[in-house]
Amino acid sequence: MKPIETIMRTAPVIPVLVIEDVVYARPIAEALVAGGLRVLEVTLRTAAGLEAIAEMKKVPGAIVGAGTVVNVAGLRAAIDAGSEFIVSPGLTDNLGAAAVESGIPFLPGVANAGDIMRGMDLGLEHFKFFPAEASGGLPALKSLIGPFYNCKFCPTGGIRQDNAADWLAVPEILCVGGSWLVAKGTPDVAAIEAAARAATALAR
Image (cartoon, rainbow, N blue to C red; front, side, top):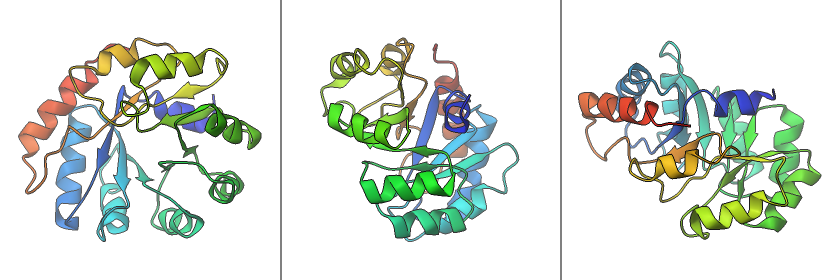
C-alpha cells in the first residue's frame, strides 16, 4: 500500500483545519486525536499555519500534514515545517512534479477527468475530489470512478457529519475531508472531541 493510501485509511474523516492562533493548535490536535481522528490537515490559509503544524506534531499519535498548498514554494515551506503529507486544492504540472520528486505523500485536488489524467501522468492514483458538492457531488464522482476505477479519492467541500456516510459507502472513497469538526474562535475541546468521536464512528 502506498504511504498516502495508508494515511487515507487511518480514519474515515480528515479534519480540515484553519488555525488562526497557534496557541490553539495543540489543544485542537489533542481533542481530535482523543476522539479517534489522528490525521490532521492544517491549511496554509493563515499566518499561523506552518507553526501550527509544528505544534500539532508534538501530540502523540497525530499525523499532521499541510493543506491548501498551491505552489512549489508552499510545498517546500510545508515540508520544512515537518508536514507528513501534502494536500492541494488543485494540480499543476510544476507542483505535481515537485511533490512527486520530494517523495512526500501527496493528495492533489481534482474536479474532472482531465485533472485525474494529469495526475496519472505523474504516477499518482490518489486524489482529493474538490470542491466535492460544487463539482457535482456524489453522482459526479461516481461517474469519474467508472473510467478511473484504479484511483482512490478523498472528497472535500460540502461534506458534513450527516452526509459523510453516503460518500464513504463507495469503495473507492477511502475517507472524506471535513471542516465541520472545529468551530471558529476559542476551541471548545470537549465539543471537538465529541465531534471527532462521531466522525470516527462513521461506517466505511
